[in-house]
Image 1 (tube, one colour):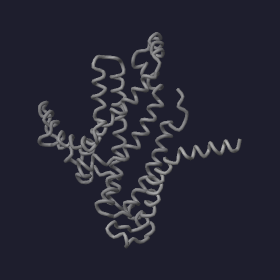
Image 2: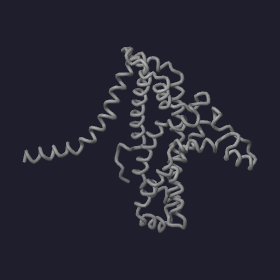
Image 3: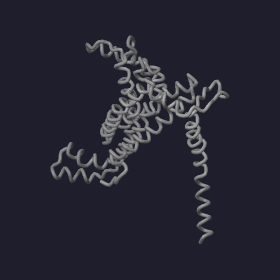
Image 4: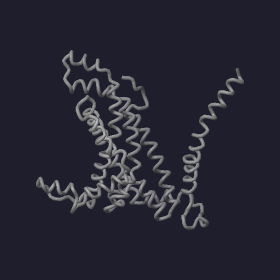
Length: 295
């Protein structure tokens, strides 16, 4: 019995070894190195001059106005993009749920932005949102609305990126919601109709409760992904105008790979990584993801 159990244990470790190896190489070792480098003045072009400086990078980070601006920007992005993107995805799923002519076309059309890389999508929207020759301003002028600055305005730039991000990501979440909707028994809706429930009451008391596990998973993944915003501001605004679209991840990238201040960038990475973990735990507790998902 003991030999059989030991053999099964060895087989289990053999199966998980490739995953553990990849996690060690690309997660655990980089995380440990980031913590170590955050305690040094590591300058990428002079690695031999690296010195241990303790918590100085963290102290400087607390006094860095650009970092706190980036935190404010990502907070605004997360708070606005989550309801917009998830709400759009649920609405699209409800539209294509029933069998109608051209449903396949609409599913493909709604999902198409997901398969296009964010860099390409961002360049496309640069042309759409161009203040002088953009398609969107041309449409606004035709209905009597004056041209808008969009990405060149500190007040509008982040809202433009929020709209782009929600449009680009909603198609993927639509498919997940659609799978959840298709798992809801039709008998529940038929019983509700017999009891006199209208469509809104059926949606509120049947659809939403039955979609709770799916919704919690989508909310959690969207929440984490939103904190990683970098491609859109990097391509479209370079963090401007006036740092109105700079995000922590983009600021970390710019500090580490443009300014070559790897020690300071590592300190930001450590603090930001811990913040994401804490906020994710809080978000899961608020939404009930850590408890029972029975309906």
